[in-house]
View (cartoon, one colour):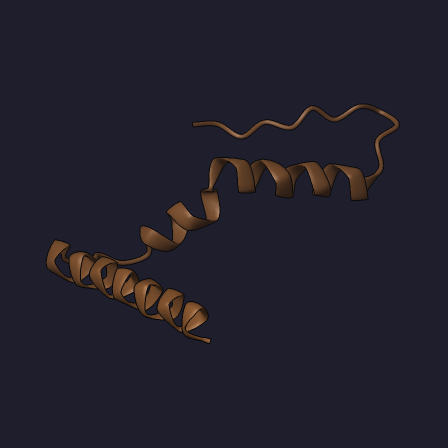
Length: 66
């Protein structure tokens, strides 16, 4: 996976940075780097995933209770 940006002679720095940020978002590079900072055991990953599901379910029911 390579991230390349084509820069032309007359391009402004703002435009170049904007395209760089958009490409990073597209490749989800920040998320990959955050996940690779340290090792998380698979059991803990499962717990986090299950807790997110429980949280989403709990919050969705709160929205419809009113």
